[in-house]
Image (cartoon, rainbow, N blue to C red):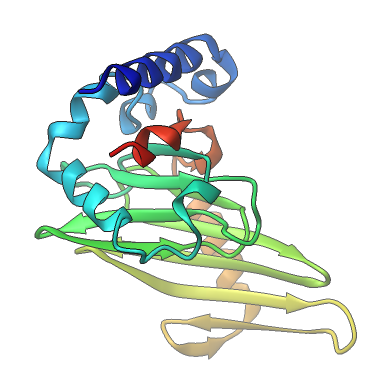
Length: 204
C-alpha cells in the first residue's frame, strides 16, 4: 500500500476513534454491523476490489469526488458488507453498493434521509422538500434492491397522496403499518456509521 494511502487511513481511523458522537450513536447490539477498524486491510479483499472496479465504471449518479465520505455496513445477512457513499449534497443523496455472486448493484436515495435495519436487508428513505414528502421502503435480497412500498404526499397546489405496495395502489394506512414495523426493528441512521474520506477510494 502506498505511504500516502496508509496515512489517510490512519487519519480516518483516528477521527473515528475520537468521534464519540459517531460511534456512540451505535448501541452494543448494532456496533458489529459496521466496519470501524482494519480499513487498510480490506483493500486487498476480492469484494473490495470488485467495488473499486465498479466505482471506476462511471455508473454512479454523481462523480465519486462529490460524495466526500464513504463507509461499510452489513445491511443484509451475507458476509460482504455494503459500501455506502455519503455526502450532504441533496442532488446526489446516498448511494449503496452491494454484491451478489460477484456482481455489484447500486441503489440511490432521493435526497438524504436514509436509515436501515442491520442484517435484515431493509432500507428506509424518507425525506421531502417544496411540499413533496415521501417514504420509500426497500428490501435488499439476492443482490437486488426491491422498492416494495412508496408513499408520497403533495401538500401544495393540488394536495394529494398515494401509496404503492408491491406495485398495487393501496390506502395510506399500509404505509403507517410499515412504518411501525420498521420502527420496531433495531435500525440506524446511515449517517451514523463510521465514515472515511473519499480521497482513500480516489487513490485506487
